[in-house]
Image (cartoon, rainbow, N blue to C red; front, side, top):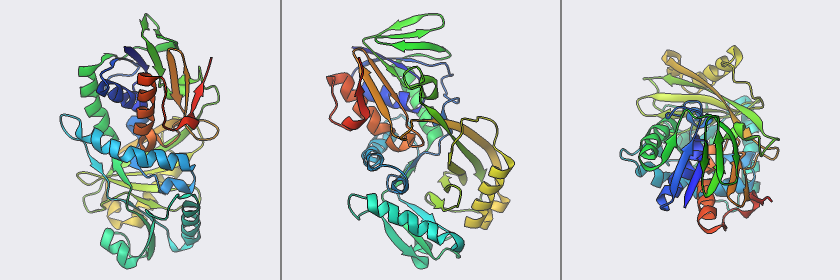
Length: 354
């Protein structure tokens, strides 16, 4: 069997990795370069937060996120050089003026959580034990021990090397359309047994209702800061996060801006992100901004993923801001459908089309 994948962003790569593990021949087609720097997945923070997301997401997202964590662990070890993966939990904190936001978030999570395991209140002593350098003004936090993160850049670099060896990868090849058993490009056509469309916002051919959700982050080198796990800070407008990476690199970002604007980060957003980072740790004041990153994620009206299936065709889209969280579980379910023409996982996201 030969499967063609249109789009080599995060989901396209995850599906390709799943399929080659099943012994299926893969043709990968994308208009981007091999490094995938135009993909929203390349720009992502890589947070794996199935419990935190219950504050705003459906239980399905939580379950897919829980299912994806062990897959990420396996993926991170599957490359010639293992990539950065961490599953040591995360913290959610709030300034005194925003404590009501923290209480409300905890309430929403607990109402949607299938069982009370995985969400803990910690006091100031507990915070200091987990993150000794966090500002002492935080005297209460939500600790989520079963969350983690994966390095998006490391994943793209490692998956590029592996997929170039194990797939027929046609980079720099803009796609015109995807139809059953066919990926049409500007200059040629790839005929396959099954075509899978993973093009994100470029996939409006099958998902005309797609919208963009803008994400903004700063990459900061802060040698004086030692934070061990992702930390979210409650904010009246939108959640802010600080995600640590090796070598004292920190990603400081915001996750929910309803816009498909790809222009550079605004001065207001930059000031809010920097202010949030400084309020967590004064050492960010001496940090160096290495990069500002902006990208837009594809979302459907209900903010849930959807896979449309037909003979010789699958189209997957709508990962919203949950790409890293749910991507491996979604890719596995697509792989099962390819191999068996059915999938027992997450039947509510599969839609049969004629």
